[in-house]
Image 1 (cartoon, each protein chain N blue to C red):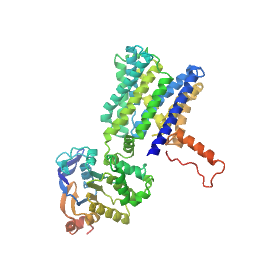
Image 2: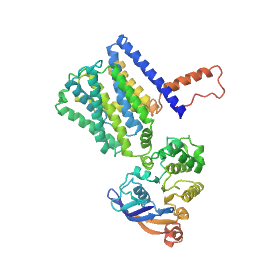
Image 3: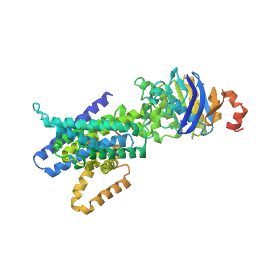
Image 4: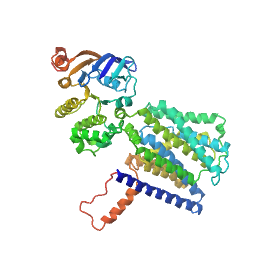
Length: 232
Length: 346
């Protein structure tokens, strides 16, 4: 589904990603784990076209997207739930979802019903201003908004950030459900244990390089990973 | 859906009727000399500033950028139109006066030139945000002023005279209606929602598939077009152009109108443009205190109502009338839990 080959990304003169190569197969949950500033969010932003790679190629669903505009990438069915939720705070819940379907003209109503089915909390609060939602609800809204285009693949940037543990496990359950329903997932998480628990495979990123890649199960038992990311 | 459509037509019919009535009333007062020349001039000036302020609100209020070069676009429109009307004549075609037709063409041409400049400056400038965009557009305004001062066709520093006084209440009103209708329809369309979402959060807008550059340019160019139109009306109102007319002071004045009226409120821009154009005239007799009172007013409003006079609220005649009717019905006996009809938008 997604093939990232040898990308190098720079912020001005700072070399943020080094020769990064990884892939996500159809139907998988793949996670990128690593410390703060390792380059996880940068990777997602590059894939969704918000940043450009100087080298290499990104292929999604058989097409190269490394030079494609972000709005066209969304139309191709790859959606990005950015870090910090980034919902439209002064719009209502329903207006937010409506914006999510900005690139589609047909089947909006059905998509909206599906999102409300998956997130009944959003249905209850459909005419509430999004800025007044709780953190967990805002995360649900951000995910719901991304689902409005019925994406083939969804990239989630730190969905657990700033949420209470009970909400975090709820969000993780939803991610697994979405995946079971056929959406491929690329997940970025600082909370490595959480990510590894629900992923099929995972890549460990350190200072803009992939240093380890394996099945999530193996990584959970890897001594190096345990020491660095899972607290012994 | 059908109900929405019906109520839209009902509302727009009401708005059309109100517009026509207002136009007829003022036209009558002008022709019957109830409003003398001095008042008529002020009214025309008010309309010119309304056009400029409402268009600036598109970039400032709805798109959420901070451009400081609005006077530059007005200047381009003013000079383009003035050069056209002073260099060409059109014969009368049937009942249509050649002068009026020429003025219409010149004004549209002024708008188009300003819009072209808007696209040109917008493409690089709109990649920047906040302070940077402000500085670039400020510089753009100054470049236009210096250019105008140094080329021949604009009359250089001497200015451009002999411009016909074509701007009258009819033209001012016509363009005001156009700019208000355009802005209102754009903002409430799918494109308008995209423009507003750019203001809310650029990254979020991009992540739902909104082409940032495209929508920024659309809003910026639309605003530039109407700035050019207002420039043309201004030129044919004062009949004499000099480069100093459109300095950055004027850009700031426009910005003050938009912020004072409320970012993202068309009615706010209209009210602020009206008040701020009339106040200096009213205070004419307190010449020394004029600017102090004017400035104090701004300070006071910004302290007590930082979101501007109207916030992002819109005046709606339909809502006002239906609320009055409802009040009349409810008047004999107020229900115990009676509350002021909410601020919900219809």
